[in-house]
Length: 111
Image (tube, rainbow, N blue to C red):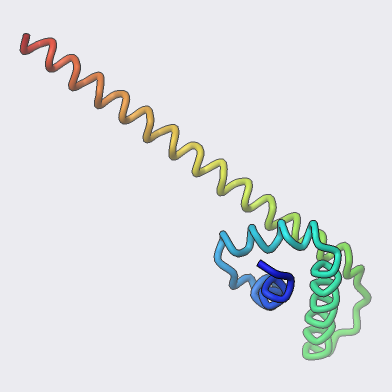
């Protein structure tokens, strides 16, 4: 994917509307692409700033830290998803082994 395509995903990242696979790819890309990260930072600042104006609040933020926190939260979420998938695979493998053993014991019983 080229940077323009990743940059089109920025609003979805900010609104948390990207699918898990898209979000994971997006985060990996912006962490390695300086141009896209800079674009994300600008859009993030605008998003937060407009939200503050809309809510008539005038609070000073460390936008860079807020963005880093959002990215970190998504990375933690993806790690949890990977762990759950790994656990599910392990359970399925164990179930297959148990079924196989059950069948094997039944065959031995018939012989």
